Each structure stands twice: as structure tokens, then as C-alpha cells.
Length: 268
Image 1 (cartoon, helix red, strand yellow):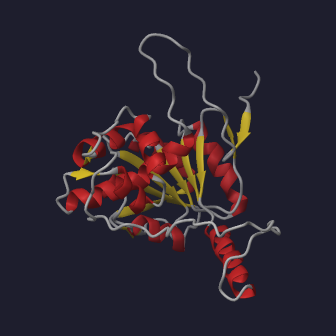
Image 2 (cartoon, rainbow, N blue to C red):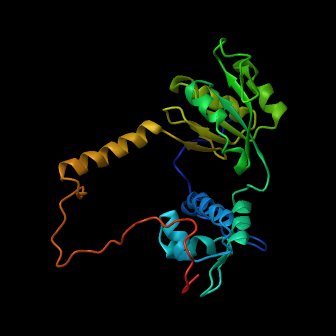
Image 3 (spheres, rainbow, N blue to C red):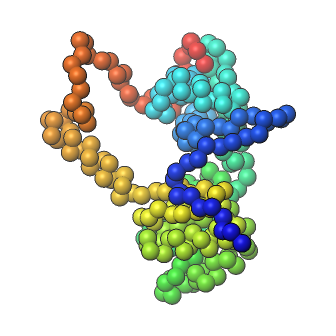
């Protein structure tokens, strides 16, 4: 029997929908990536007692343009009211539903080292609808240890743990050499969403979504920008020589707005 076609995680392929009654175009991946940013800002606004928000305020706090905010939210069918803005509570519910956050997601964490411990102890997941319900590790010294009340189970029990806890998301915090094998076992049990902290690229079948988090890469990117600032006396320099321009280009302040900033009028 032919094996399922595998794709390299992180390389997105275009989504396709069959035209017909009751269908709507898929939300672009770039928009999906920004929805959690909007949701975080909106949650802070709601906690501050703000009822309405303009696209300008939401854009400033999320670090994007107001035009992009309006386009993203129109993908969800939310257009706001010109001169008034968006209802914060309505928008929170709309984005939460689009992200599938209206129900709790059971999460399995594989690899309970220093990073795994930190993730297991982080309280911010549960408030956003994600519950780490199971921990698995290959180190015999960690078996039986309890982290936030959850017992670490041996790696040999991975499949049974997934089945018993209705796991929908797997988090891999193992060394790079073990990550692909763990990924394959998770996929074989029916897990189709994986968050990968291992410093390696995973290969998965179609239909499996993988998000990669590489802290070292992020630090290297920051180091690159630090090196550029030092080489130019603190001013950013272009990657390649730029032709002269007749007048300086105003790129805007780029400052992030505060969550409780007044919404203002104009466009939504």
C-alpha cells in the first residue's frame, strides 16, 4: 500500500475549496497568523471595560496597518461600523470561534526537560483554552515525577496516553534526534496538530499541521539586527545599497498603542 505523501512542515501549500452552496473562501494563512494578536489585544480591551474599538487602535496595538486589520476581519465576515468601530465582545467571540477556541484542547507534552517543565508550569495556556493533560518522557529518572499535578509517563506508553486523554495537540520538546520518531508516533495515533520545539524540521503527511518554535533562530535574528545597529552607530542600514531618493521617506512612528487607548472616530 502506498504511503501517504509527506510534506516538509512549515512549507504551506495553497488551500482549495470546492465551490458550491454554503461554502466560503478559506481564511488566508497570513490572516490566521494575525488573529491571535488581535484576540490578545481585544481581551485586554475587554478587561479594561472598553466596548468599542477602531481599526486604527487595534492595528496600533497589534503592530500592523489599519487597512490590514479591516481586510483580515472582513475575512471573518466582521465589517464594523463606519465612524464607530467594532464591538469588542462580538469580535472576541468571532475570532475565538474561527480559531477553534470555543472548546478546550487537550495537549500532550513529550520531553520533560528544562523547557518541558517550564511549558508544563505555564498558566497562560489554560486561560486560552489549552490544557496540558499528559506528560511523557524517555528518561527513567523522570518517570513518576509530578509537574503541576500531572504524572510523567514513560515514552513506551505514548499511544495509550494519547488514546486515554483524547489528545488533539502534541508538543515536542525532545532532542533533535528523537523528534521525527516522536512525530511519526503521534501522527500514527491520529494527532494532526504538532508544536515542535526541537531544533529540526519535521516531515509529516498531508493533513498534519506543524508549527516550529526555534528560540535559537529568533535570538540569531535579533543578533543580526544588533550587529547592524552597532556597525552603523545605532541606525538601521539597508541590506543592499539603495539608490538616492529626492526626499526622506516617512515610515511612520511604528509605536504600539496601549490596549486601553481611546478608540477615535473615522473608519472602523
